[in-house]
Length: 522
Image 1 (spheres, rainbow, N blue to C red):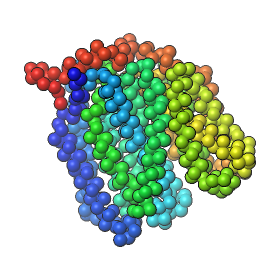
Image 2 (tube, helix red, strand yellow):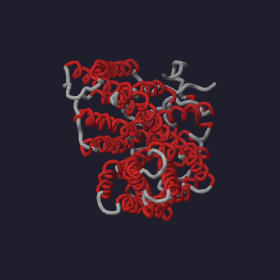
Image 3 (cartoon, one colour):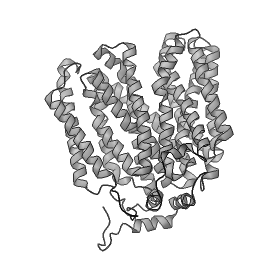
Image 4 (tube, rainbow, N blue to C red):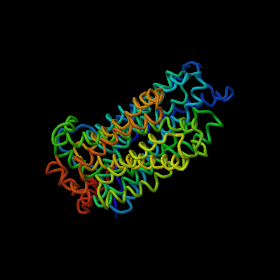
């Protein structure tokens, strides 16, 4: 009979007290938002009332209190590993489902930015250059969050980091109640900080919890489909709620999803391999990413992630407005982009199959080449060319970029040794999202010079060409290094075996018995 995963929370009363305090603070902000219905839910320049300040204090205290109970205490010597679930097909499916839900919630955050911009600009009376600060600040927060949470995953554990990020994200949903644009920027930056690290942490945990033979295909599918699902969920929430209650409600609508994720924490076990390593070896510094033998891998991953960030956050950000201006493609830009985004589903399925059956490195090169081909076609024909060519090119561009983002996270998690897996994933995510910080201003500048969209397509195609070449020449093949990754220690190889060993899983489950009590740890 399989054992339930142990609770990560040694002091549940304090944890849920913190959750209640944070929820109370958020509900107070929500009530103020509801009270603004008579003003069409406009809260601009209402001022921070004493009740709002008290609610903010409750949120801060609640997050700190809950976070304190989640972080594992320091021990003087090696500790016994926590209780872990027996590795069964059902437990693995449950883990995949919960972590996929976590990624979907995480992806909704940046996707929501595109839908709130018009309402936010109208309420605060902002210029186009002013409102551009919102995605810049929010995505800068995700860059910092990727670095912070990725490193935290290697220090305090994958499961603890997921919970901490969720707690932080829950508190920052009050972004929707800020009465000033400055306050909205600050809170959205903090929300980005909370959301930025979920991807690398989830991939690290998936890599260490699933059998090597299947995990690559599962993670590639998971990466691509949750990205598409997050976008569709954000667009659905916006389509239904914004006409009823304005742009602010989109942030509050995410609170129940985060609470569900926190409630599902008991089905997110820490990996046995990570736990064993923590109790037997010293911490590895983050600087190991840039030292041999990891240097080449870090440069290749960085180039691939940066190239994607420039295309996705820079070029594609301006594509809707450019398509609307051209007006020659026979359908609205929103419809075209929605149909194109649906290609992520078959694209990711094909990418997962090629990744496992053929070559991880070769698959990454193919999707980089698809992206480059689409960009070069746009550079050649522009947006005024043949309608069928334009439609096909935009769809190929979305298919290529969807494949790139679906591959980079799982690839990074598989090629690095366990000791710096979370740190490496955080670095790759941060580099990719940095395209959101400087990509839009760069593309806006290029669009203002002769050549416009054609010149912009050429500019962003060059980094993708270089990234594809880097992967082809110096990239690693996870299938060839799954058991003993380059730079891994003998202990890493031993712990990788532990992931897929039913005997070790059974032994881990046996540790749920508390000494002298005959019960299971909770």
